[in-house]
Length: 256
Length: 268
Image (tube, rainbow over all chains, first blue to last red; front, side, top):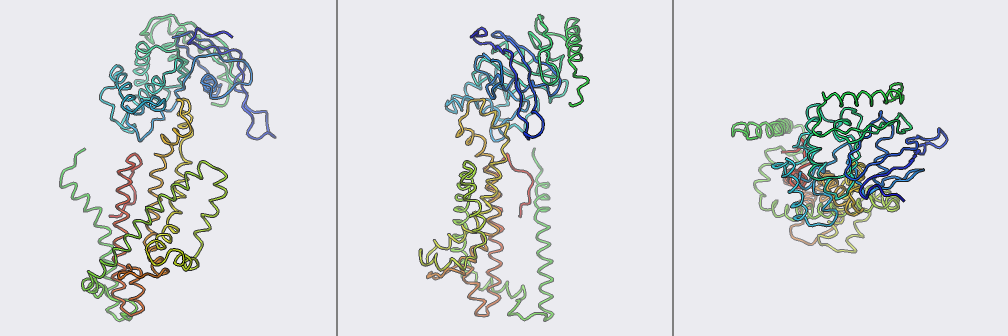
């Protein structure tokens, strides 16, 4: 079996069909069709596609939360950061970030110490004791990201982490994510429906078709960070990705 | 945020004024109704005679409040523990759910008078059989709200904990237990509303050898002896006791589960 560079991800011709809720009707939902995807160790790959194309399903497969009908997945232990922050309302920000460490059996003091280190490095100093409802959407996503980082897993699967944020906050968060990954390198699979975000953040962008999702194109983004959205290469890549999405039938897809 | 002293006073005044005014208005109508000779004072004593009965029997009422308060507080605590434990068991085991839930619902339909002699036969004239009656009446709201609270935990939350490597027990401790706590305490507040009347039923139905047998027992004795004003005075004490307990529980809920506190119908 090939290992994707030890800490990478190798998805080989993976298919998945959800069984129908009522077996007498329909054949179920064909979510993914022979999807192949590779991420080398430390690489950030973005997966873009229309809504309902199976992007989130793909991440669940990589994280081992469900098993594919066909194909194979080879990857280092992966952790999912879902779209919603899902912070526990009864824990403060620091304890929420340290959640995985507590689950792994570390004492509260040890877990908080470790989380505290990242809080200071990643600009969350002063928010340790804040309860989730006291934090802004952007801050909540930062805490959720730290919680994901501190799971200690090498592969991070981010499911539209900034999808619910306003444009300004989202731009801030994108810069913050790149900075965070520079300090704490991981292999990242980022799912987004925002093509520009994909081009700004990723080393490579995989474009998925409408359901059933299949990879209809891959774009290399070999630009240094920080990238400007007005950069000519960024704009060109964004347009190519959009063109691919249109050819993939997402525009004619009636369901959002 | 810091509130000015005058604003705090005005706010607490605004909280207290409506119930006080309502009670005063009702008492006024009551007084006029009785003074007009509409009802015999054996059937409905006037508020002023209830007040003087309360004044004259203050020590007696306090001595009888003590055992009743003990029954209610211990009973609610036990009902909370039993209701919570049953809810957790039901949450984890569908078999238990099918086995226990119908029984729990049915238990609410059993008239206490049917089983009271058995309780006395088993446990005698002390406080224990009375606690059993109160727990029987009070565990149910705790059970129902806690089962719902446990079931209302976001499935995505549990999935997240699973991806972080949490065991079933850890997921329970980290997500389900804290979510169920405010639900259980809300159930306890409902239980309290029936718990005071539960104590009355318990005292009515199970005999006792104590000198001060409790307000419920006293109310029955006074009604039989046509000491109606004192019976009403005892009822007023129970009335006040229920409100105090309700607010104490609301406060406990606020302290134990601050994340769940939203403006609620707290009585003050």
